[in-house]
Length: 56
Image (cartoon, rainbow, N blue to C red; front, top):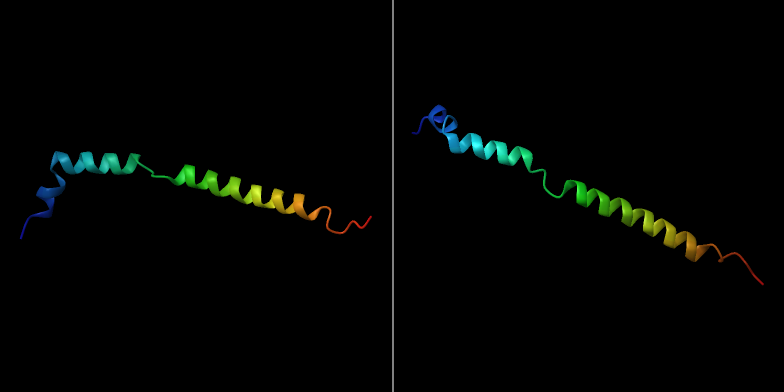
């Protein structure tokens, strides 16, 4: 059975942890897309429904 301390002391392991900690993935982009999408849907609903009750 391999020694876990020898594995974690390896320089490649610490480099891997540094890379994985710095890479946050698509979090900011995905959050921005979702917020813009929700605001866009709300604006579209308001635009389409604003004349619904008017009868001329």
